Each structure stands twice: as structure tokens, then as C-alpha cells.
Image 1 (cartoon, one colour):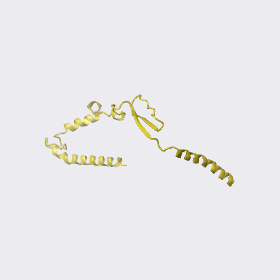
Image 2 (cartoon, rainbow, N blue to C red):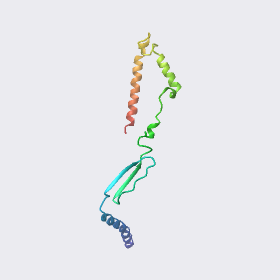
Image 3 (cartoon, one colour):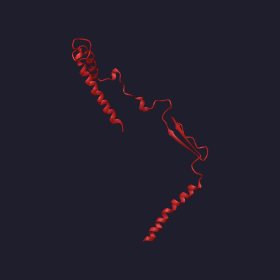
Image 4 (cartoon, one colour):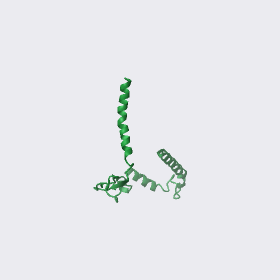
Length: 136
């Protein structure tokens, strides 16, 4: 039983030993490695000699085109804004001079300044927490 185990181990080790001897017979790493970016329908060039390795990578449509992830950004103009947000803006603009509006116009405008400061502080706190949670 032990003899069979020794024989199997020797047979499994022989190809690994042969591979290491073949690899040491070579001169070492290739003399030249070229990295090439391909655009559109370009093809990868052939190596000039056997000691050269050519690595090709597809870089997209054109070197002058904006990458796809940056092309379709969400619009923030008036037609793409929701009606509820539009109404919030209209109400916010029309509140100037009314009580709790924090404006110098009208009789009750100054009463909303502390409320507005608290809302701003709370929003900044939420923004810091969200930003802190993104850091790995």
C-alpha cells in the first residue's frame, strides 16, 4: 500500500519537475511587452518578433467621444422638474413678507429666521451623515 502511494506521488511530481526545467532553459521574461488601446473596429497588430508580447484592449468607439457613463446625465431644467417641486418653489417665492418667512419685507417677515436656521442646520447634519456613510 505504501509502495503504491510512493509511486503515485513520484508520477505526479515528474511533470512539475519537467516543467520547471523547461522554463529555466528559456532566457527569462519576454524582451518587449506592448500595451495598445484599440478604438472602433481596429485590429490588434501582430508581434514583430517571437520575444515580443502585444496586449490589446478595446477602449470604446473613439478617443474623442465622451464615455457612456457621462453622456446621459439627468436634466435639471424646468420641463424635467416635477409639478410638486414647481409648486413648492412658487409657494416659497410668494412667502416673502408673510409671517415665518424670514424676510425684511412685511410686518411678520423676521419671525421665521430661527426656524429657517434650524432647518438649514438639520439638512447640513443629514448631508454630513450621508457623506460619512459613503466613506469605506
